[in-house]
Image (cartoon, rainbow, N blue to C red; front, side, top):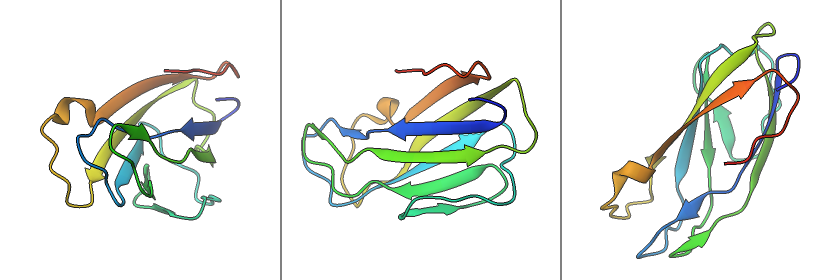
Amino acid sequence: MDGGQVELRMTPQNHGPFGVADATVRLRWSAPLADEQRLPAGCARSGARTVLCRTGALPADGWGRTLTMAVRLRGEPSEVVLGIDTVWGGGAVDRNHRNDRQEVLVLDTGDSYVF
């Protein structure tokens, strides 16, 4: 994050045992988003702090396509928390919901984070 602009690059992973034809992830920010956003295809705003994105197909025990976006937050907070969770899994049965949610503390340092 730098000056209220956050660049996000996320690659979804399916731990299996079956492939998923499509899924939806929710990106929830602890700070409100600016009114105007340019979101990638397959993503839509769903409230003041939330964006929903399709992942596309996720092969069994494999990786999906990388989702890249830049969002502008309202103002210039020094830190935000980004919550990422699966909200729809294409009807696949998931026996391990512990890996459906992640939280990342994002600091306004201009540095890249990898997790």
